Image (tube, chains in turn orange, purple):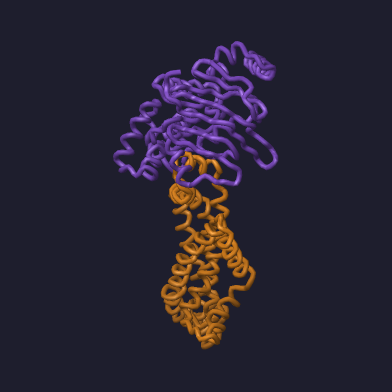
Length: 222
Length: 256
């Protein structure tokens, strides 16, 4: 590595890390938190006995899963301006990722709820609990544990998918790395540096996920 | 003929699709008495038991538990408030225990007291501790279900079912999932409850136990009651051919 390359690397690390901490991570956290709320509500709607709820929730999941995420972001950020809705790139990205996490996450939550034995519902019912009480006190806490590993996957995917927000003018880590490459002409070096930072973030997340799994597993034999 | 009637059902029918599982059941049980329901698998005995707390909703007939009376008609649902009210007066013990695995033994017993009855945690805890002592597991309050044997889990489940002070306890084959050496502890608890005057309905395969503990036995087959009366009559001196056939089969099985 030449001296010039070492200088470029050192000069780009700080802006990359800054973009990661100030843009990539907030977008990931906010979208995931909102997405989880959407996911649980959508899952409950899909399991509801009220058919219009099932229909709306099913339609939403179908559309989001059946179209590319990048295209969804373009529609929200660029497309909506044509009907007078002008959003900041952060808002547009947050909406896009929330909808995406909500749709995929709802399938995980739905599967986890359905994986809980019927006997748990019956025991709760036999004690006079309403359906809502049974869900809140008995079913969801057990389903949460089942859904942590797949939701952890979604979280990690989301962190990397936020790089798509660069194409709607959001200054996250990947977009910043592109800007640095445009002035330094060192794509291999700068993109690799960005890759290492993504890897670092994901490693921390994986570690946090394993702690959460252990905490939730304290009541199970395995 | 002196006691008050706790359970009364008339002409109860239940079908699953085109399969008629209960074909007009009539039954009465006095307060403080123990009813055992026996019969071959598929006879409808578990379905009948599950009708008592509306885990299955009958299609037709009348059911009265305590002062609560319900009429069933095909296509007419039961109001949610009635269902919940009925379930607060009945407790159920399941074949596979169905303890809440994410809660400790004492939390399992506290849960409905807090969530359903709105009791304070402290009051629920003291009642739960008392019940744990009663089923002989006072030292297991903080154990999770997976740390307990099947027999211990089932005794916790009995304590959980009693936590709301129900009028009637319903048992669905409470010892069928247990290793033989653990059956005794569970039966002992049920016997003790019977001695204390708890009204109970028990679906069971344990003929000797049914004979010992029950005041009244009904034998079901093919969705109808084929034999009904005190144990010495139903098991000792059955009259219907189907009852005789069933009892021969189980007693032979017991011997070998």
